[in-house]
Amino acid sequence: SGIEVDYGLEHVFTLLSLVLDRDALRLSFRAVFSSDREMRGTALEYLENVLPEPLRQGLWPRLGEAPTAPRRRRPGDKLLAELERGIAGRAPR
Image (cartoon, rainbow, N blue to C red):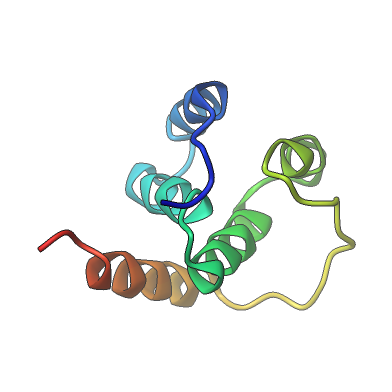
């Protein structure tokens, strides 16, 4: 079942999709609220790569995460591909 969805956060992701890749944000939103810790971690890593630092620092506590110091980053396209594979593997049957 995962974490309970916060509809205020859903609105934030919708607004972000006006300036960032809509499909990638939709995948990230689903993964952040997934019970799959690996998918959640990949989504957070993706968001860490695409969000400006001040926005990320404000968003992280709302996602139940402590603000983190910047770390070495994997390419966003690789993270997105990982999210796509993970979400596709969890599709309802």
